[in-house]
Length: 354
Image (cartoon, rainbow, N blue to C red; front, side):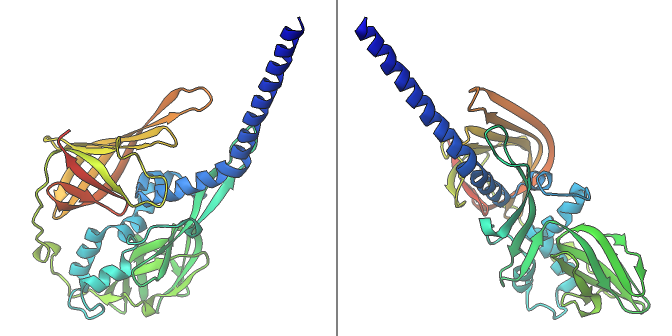
């Protein structure tokens, strides 16, 4: 009898200690780990260049559209778009020494975003019963010359123009009073302007980066006269499409500082009919991202166009998986290193016969 009683007491103490340890681990997870991990995950997601994910997770009080977000994002992250602009408007005009200097000035994709480059907007607080929700508020970006820009919803931008002038910002004609044009809400970053002053047409790229910014349009370094520019882009750009094997490409190298997907499970699969599957698996989260769509080869770049997305998440509490399906409209680019290797700023994939 005493022996059974001792066993019960020992078992009770063991269960209590085990429960107490589990509770302590849960406390650490809630109050010391979760928030920091969530922020680091958002930083890693930004560096993967998933434009639709970024737009959906930016704090956007004025409800600017995805198209509004993509204007600066594409201009800052798409070298092909910048090349088109250079050859159409800037080549031979003397503002930039050559296309390399132009790209270094306006391309912001060479440097990965670090945690201290991102400011977050928090909703709620993490505690024992609920989790804090965060969104990107502002992300600092730098070009090759370490000049600063940003991505985020900003307000109260004032563009000052000359007498007898008008200005178009991203194909929208601005209303100006006393030579000042107020933009209430816009996504920050690089934007295109067309400026007409005293019957002369100009083109320019403008860097909007903070609230309450004031810019004198006539003093823009990028302002170039375009009245006599009728040269079509295609006369200057004649890319030859690279050769690339069709089939399975496995993740070979991850350039992210943290949150790298599994090399064993992550892949890109190119089909002969032009379709593509893109899958990444995060071991720590026990979660996978699957994108489906089509691909094209443009010069030395593999361009993936996705129209559907499935995010499979694992619930640590219930041990169940949940598939979150969504329609997307996004693009991802990889440089074709050779017929068996593709890479971007985040990953390198190698052709596999497995």
